Length: 324
Image (tube, rainbow, N blue to C red; front, side, top):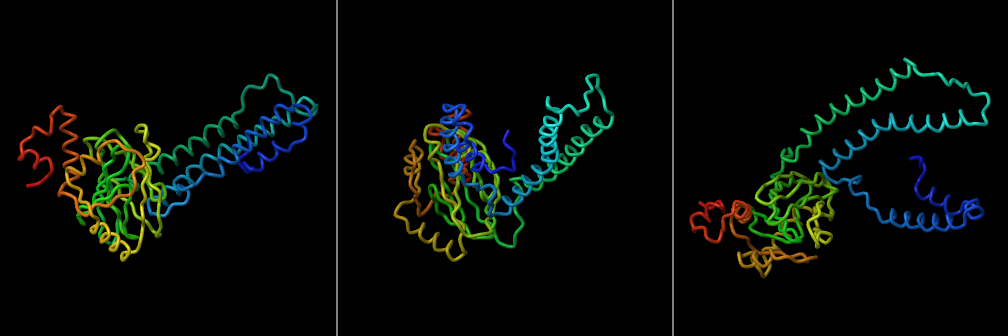
């Protein structure tokens, strides 16, 4: 077992250059050297975005992760130390060790091994209860700024984002001002996906015929990676988007740029967009139909109910779209 205090690279270097491996087991040494170098190279490409949060929710989730890990290490570290200490003390060559083959019980040990875990579990239970309510993804963020609403639709295999307040839409890119809450309404026009911006906070599922919600913000300007965290088919690996946090002025300019786009998100354009495609580039649409998100949500529900939305009357289509 590799002690947690030893960096992976140091341990790999030990395996690679340890002389006894070359002398006694040359084949094992070669294999270990290859695997160790590969492990270091793979770990070198890791990006610990979850441990580098830039939003309020992400920061709270990192604190929760560190707190729970620390509590569990209260048990894990002493156990590892005792395993090593007992193995050393009661080794065959130590004739001074107290040998008690009929030993079977210790009240002190029983008290410790039961009391400490029970206390930790109780503390974790309280933390879980509080954090579950505090980090509820449906709970709006408290802020003096007016939130930006973004409606999210997962497609095969790209993300459609609709800004109902600005009458624009985009594919695989969103933008919002720094320190301003973002209210996400999320659904799927196809199979289930998972909407996730690791540096900003919680992931939540997008499901056909259902609406989920998520509330996030960013405390620093930057471009943050967004992904689908749920396998959804052949193009899943390329189902990525950019979440750009910028100044209010920058956001206003971004909206103007979108409104100046040559294409509007018409029903015909959406029908073409909804077809399967992989690694789609960023696209901006100058306008989007009113209640487009609700129409997608409602039409998916009708398909699930076995009703062909194409046969619905204009009145029922308006009701599905939420248009009075």
